[in-house]
Length: 265
Ligand SMILES: NC(=O)c1ccc[n+]([C@@H]2O[C@H](COP(=O)([O-])OP(=O)(O)OC[C@H]3O[C@@H](n4cnc5c(N)ncnc54)[C@H](OP(=O)(O)O)[C@@H]3O)[C@@H](O)[C@H]2O)c1
Image: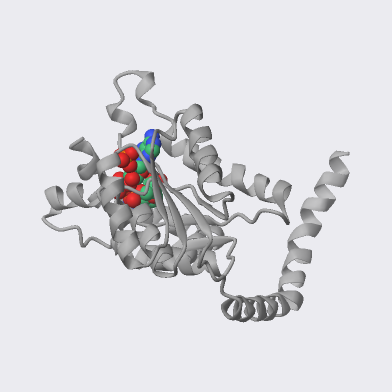
């Protein structure tokens, strides 16, 4: 058995390189054709029912505006009802024919059932679900004082990726799933801290409206993955091709900017 494993380990690298040299150009050509055809078949969302969680601010709020401009009906979900009402009014002015607000907590299963039930009661259907609500955690390992502080928020985000990739296989072709990778986006989650620390939120962050436009376009094209800003995709590619170099650069950036920033928390 060990012999077979050793032979496979020896054969896989040359076969992979030969495969890439011979077939990768065709694969890229196929991707280009699919890319062009997706641009030509942009989904018309007018009259479609779209439920957005975390719609009271930031990325969720601006995704709501993009759907509203194209005439979609909206269901806005978050905990702050007053903020949702403001977003709902703005969405109506931008062109959404029907907007309802459902305050609640996505961490509560009963609330999640309520979001869907009330949507179906009101509209009779649900076309798009934008699972955007979330929080972030910026605590250094050295600053943990007890194990409970090893809050699994960031780990759960990584786990969500695999969860939705598996769910995509299970639900295909009835329900399509688009997974979004945001970079640093200037929202309530990031901007106040950047401004306090550096006097500006300019630091490589992308504007939230540009991010929402990119996400909306990607969803309309039926993309499986969306990277906003798009350079995130290239960082991931580099990470796979030459992980040591990306690790080295990440370490340099972290020591210079990240560590002093997180230490203030
Ligand atoms: N900004 C970035 O750089 C960045 C980068 C990577 C990923 N993301 C992710 O993008 C998503 C949107 O973040 P954002 O930047 O737009 O931040 P944000 O402006 O703080 O928005 C977060 C939204 O989530 C809602 N929310 C939080 N916890 C909730 C809960 N338990 N139940 C219901 N709603 C909840 C908030 O509304 P209420 O407080 O009213 O409930 C708010 O509308 C998050 O999942 C975040 O992790 C952001």
